[in-house]
Image 1 (tube, one colour):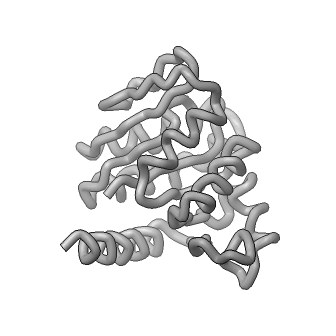
Image 2 (cartoon, rainbow, N blue to C red):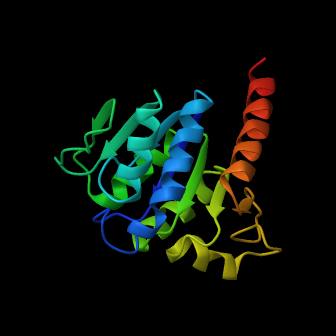
Length: 178
């Protein structure tokens, strides 16, 4: 399974990213432990932290990069799109099975809405700030972004809950493949 992780970019030693270091490390380790492939935007901030944790736990990490930027040092594979930040996000979203959102500004909001439009399950890590928390205020029935009810947007309170949800999703995906 390919797990996309989205969220704040920026300096990992400054807020709002700094206070999410532990959560990012737990998410990255969990993805690696379960032999899922991680895909993210490949840059700094949340992307760098989850990449470091996954890579240090023998996981595989793909970075989908904008323009001609270099990725962070923890990527196993880089996909240089030559596209701007927003368009690059849609390449990422088309190639994942599920999206985990941690904090984030407008780019993350665009990714959340893009994932929804592509019917990708979305896990919002509660309490991580930014658009990950803000979007919960507009959810219809607490789980949809519009009346078409394309896919559930799940509010996740812990990495343990995230892992259980991902395992259940993987089982459904594997049953469809058989």
